[in-house]
Length: 120
Image 1 (tube, rainbow, N blue to C red):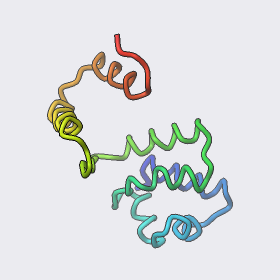
Image 2 (spheres, one colour; image 1 turned 30 degrees about the horizontal axis):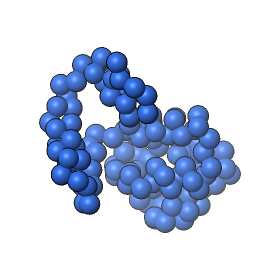
Image 3 (cartoon, rainbow, N blue to C red; image 1 turned 90 degrees about the vertical axis):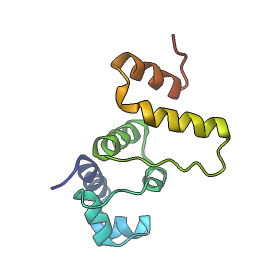
Image 4 (tube, helix red, strand yellow; image 1 turned 180 degrees about the vertical axis):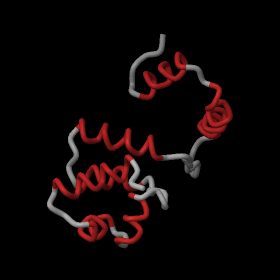
């Protein structure tokens, strides 16, 4: 079953007159791995977000659609804390522990902060 992310990637390929192998070669993976990602059988490596945006010169609207598709498909996110300060590590762990308890207002506030805006 094609995921929202899979539909985005397939449309991106079609719009660029590419087949699965073309995109897989550009990303540096096998066609079978890319197919498994599209079908939700494998998790998309987080490095692909920047890589695909760069390779395909995605505009802001496409980047937003891509990010939304990734968010809709992801069930697990890992954070590399290597080299992070103690305070950054504490924040990451605290966020992870409280993640499922945030209400809509808190989510909006966090999103504002993450997008560079000010919280109320």
